Amino acid sequence: MNQRFQSHLFWGSHSPLSTLSGAGLVILASARFSYALICAGALIWVYGLTALIFSASRRILPRRGRMLILLFLSAFLCGFFMLLTGLLNPLLILGTGFFLALIPPCFLGSGFFEASETEYTLDVFSRAVLEAVVMAGFILALALVREPLGMGALSLPGGAEGIVELFGSGGSDAFVPARLLSAASGGLLLLGYAAALFRYFRERSAPGGDR
Picture 1 (cartoon, rainbow, N blue to C red):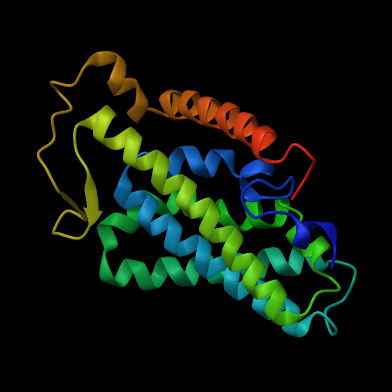
Picture 2 (picture 1 turned 90 degrees about the horizontal axis):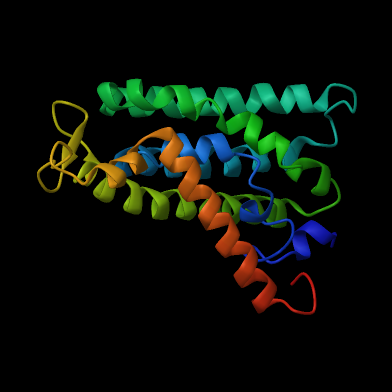
């Protein structure tokens, strides 16, 4: 088994939080908790199905242009997820579609497929789903900080307007520095602090190297 598949899912040097090739996706999707939930579902759907199809058909896929084929495949799966979600909640998908489209290039940019060439189908599928879960959990955690502090609300998918707020929005009365968290610049700032904490605790938890 190669180094990536042996790497710890959370603390390892090949974990989604260590490389974080989808930093833009994390910042945009964590603006609201309802957005983060949709993004979490899309991540698991796209990562899992793309890895499963790739692993099952890699023997017949041409070497030249393989990444382009995988990009189209993951983009198709992402678009299909958006279509299904749009049938249930068209207004919410209008607000999330622009960053859900970042999932396919982020997945390919992580180097997952280069590392999974010699792995078994079940191992490839399970690793892809677990990496998606780690990334989704990180996005959900950031959203649970950004939306309540920055907007004074916590939203879920549903309702006539696409989202339902669990408690009243206090964004107009919120403390001004805290409202910065709801903006992209605030998300970038929070991501920087989270990355610094991640590196600190990773070094403490794995003093002997990658696990």
